[in-house]
Image (tube, rainbow, N blue to C red; front, side, top):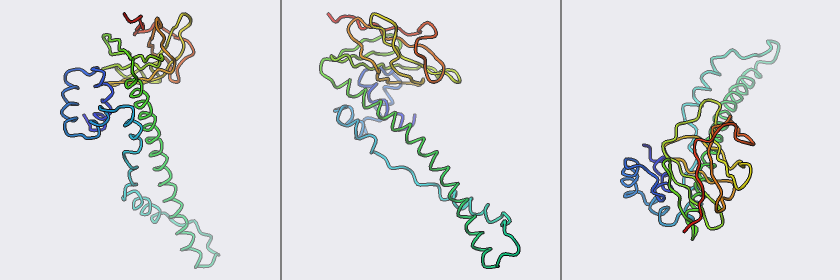
Length: 233
């Protein structure tokens, strides 16, 4: 398991939601990772700093060289009657344009990856805040744990959930005496922490279904997971 993946297990470890093998790997990582030690000690304060923990990687050096070599190999599209001094200028402009396009595509791809990483970190922060709230309680079930704060803010932590089919997504729902309401979309994975987008009051039920990509307004099929926030004794 990669180090980045181990960093993301902090919230699940705090919930005792990891299986024995993942817990062993995380504890071995935790013993030498000051970052995860800090997160585990104060989840709500340290999670906000995760988005600034690493810098964006620099473009690969070979990318520019490859673009320049390919551009130089192309025949310049120059009108023969133009003065000779224009030819190297146009050729240089073509090379620069190709390099700009290549770097622009690389930057666009990198931006998408950073946006996804930022969204993932924001979800981890919300889960950490729910975990850190006084008075929160946990409801354990076969697939994971539901954590509910005293204000109804809740997070769903699931383990070993297979990826949904192509063009599909998992969707969480909260039913509180009426029609189930959408509460968040997520994918599968070894450990998934999902901050629910609707409050889970006492007596409410949390459900999960598999839906088309983008989610649905109402469940299209029977839920494969149902957890009720029963009154605490």
